[in-house]
Length: 64
Image (cartoon, rainbow, N blue to C red; front, side, top):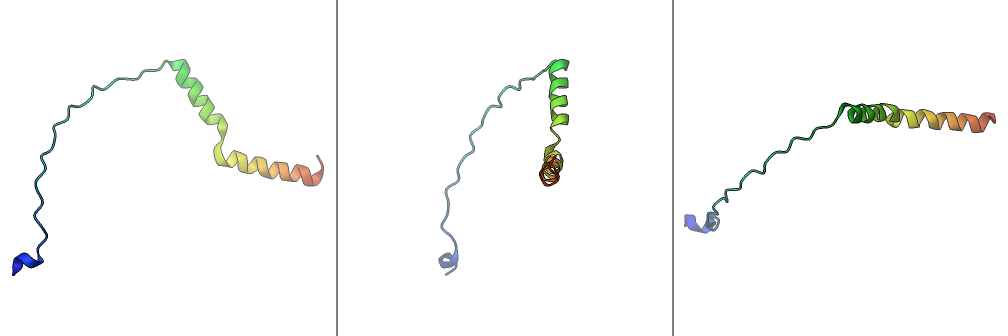
């Protein structure tokens, strides 16, 4: 009677052994990293666009 309520038996699947891919080291020179860092700092993100939107709205209202 206990076999009625149990789930059907599932066959065991053997795991395939996968070989790890060789790791490649990525290097960049100091000038590229400086350029990328400078670009990241100058974008400003959401706050810059938020404040520029307010400035544009005020300029339209005040007529500048």
